[in-house]
Length: 252
Length: 253
Image (cartoon, rainbow over all chains, first blue to last red; front, side, top):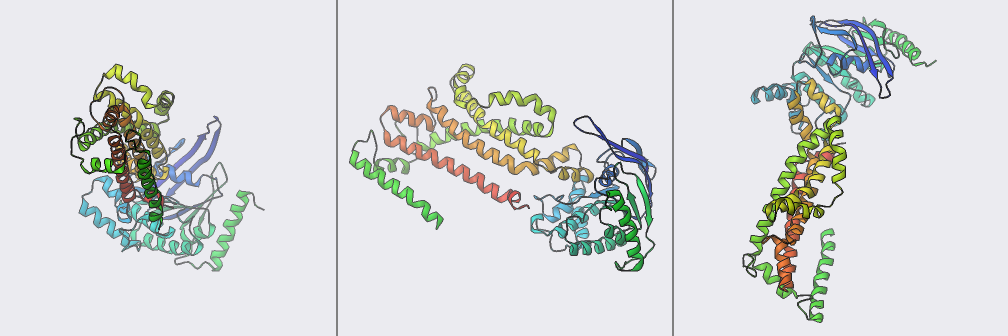
């Protein structure tokens, strides 16, 4: 499974009729099983890239393809995990997770078995009958991960999924997503504005410029996992990325 | 404690009523409790040849249900369309905003002209009374459905119809339910008012007006108590369902 973005640009038109270029000629190839982080200053169009890949928005120019077949609408090869509030509050945890299979018309025993399996994978066994409002922010995001995994996509698109969590929960979730990634062998595209998060997680970090977003640099993280956040190499890469981001955000 | 506090005033009112009835001593102004309670205790007994309390209540409930059901059948699909599509909204909005301020009872002459005396004109009045709260709440409910919920559905493979049945409807359901509850309250008022007008020969509204013409104040009051109790009971059913199925709306942070 290879995902490629070929010369993708995106132009928005505001209500006043002004045009804003959010993305400018982005080309990128993502290999099977890779963990990619997309990093950039706020408003650089990182989320837009993800939304175009997910088929929720269309590229103004350029194409997206998975294994050489073009992507123009949401497909079951991909699942998206949103920043927050994406769970259906009227459904239990269990019913949230099995929704994707329900939509596909998978028979009840099968979809229930699937939901069970993925809830176990994210460590939420025993919470099947809870409602989202009964869960903490971290647990809700785990449900969202299980729900995305349940449709068995090849690619997971994650849009700042831990952005609303406290630092401690965030670190724990980062470790867990790595474990899930290793177990399931999914390709992950992970949008974040946290340099630390990107260096901890990614095989490659795509650094975007400020709007209109273009690829400024692709940083390869050679370090194996689990990574030590205080190691010399980690700190060095982090410094290099921070400098770039600060420059893009106009911070001296 | 709260419940006990709430009981003090009704008890005082009943005592005051009874005292006043004895002092006034004129059943054409204020009948005593002892003449009202027997009417309520014999709901199956015929009253002045118009049928029993229960029979008349059944007629009123039947009419209100019919008008209310038609209103819901029109307002919910229209509300979903207007809430979802700017185009549909703009097409209907101006017209509906012009009609909405006209009170349901102002439609009575037209209703009589169009549908003649009988159930159709009453049902029409009820329809007019209950359609707007249901419509406005449905529009609000659909607009309140988070964009992310719809997008999650789409990325998980939902088609247009599934987005409607699995995301939009359940997401908007609590607000639509509120609209139905308010709409039913108004429908209940409309049926009684429409039955008081010339034409009908049955229903609780007709019963109290007929009792007035016969000078039977105790029956008027018994009829009013019945109207109030039925209205309250139906509202309790709506509230119960709200609590049972739609409590997520208030619990969600």
